[in-house]
Length: 244
Image (tube, rainbow, N blue to C red):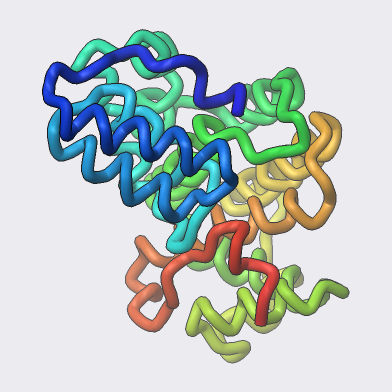
């Protein structure tokens, strides 16, 4: 897979390197869960390429659970250990985590990306963490969640309704969220940014279903990090998201 690139680092510890190589073979065979296990073992031995590859696996939603924070932690760690790709793109994650990315800039980055019809790990990690930060910073958390779930409840996709159920939030919370959003408010601007992100993904070559999954995953992350996430199930990766 192109996005995983050639190895940046080779461990002098044979066992650690063997785990990394086994992870690469698993990737080539399309077994992402096995790749994650092998890379995790190699990461325990500070294998820099394995750590970076974990950020790609988890950030791109290749496996369940879809863990944005583990992906971000691996990105930070790989950069700190000197991985060139992780370091060169670290400004994106740092900007997202301080809420300084900008919804228009994020959408532009997505549209200009060569997605190949896949979810780009760095963009998904940044999007989830950025939107979580600005929802809390702006005090728009409740209104954004209510709007997003109320809008999702109108979807023709069964998998979206399954996603709503997994959030553990009932209709008594989000019902009417579409109507209650005040034009020009922080929540209005945030949800508009999510609209632009969805459109940008579609223009970059991502399918409608995958773009919808991406939006659900971002919203699910916001919910999980919020005081309303106590009953939410772990986010699902592409391998299980579209199942009931």
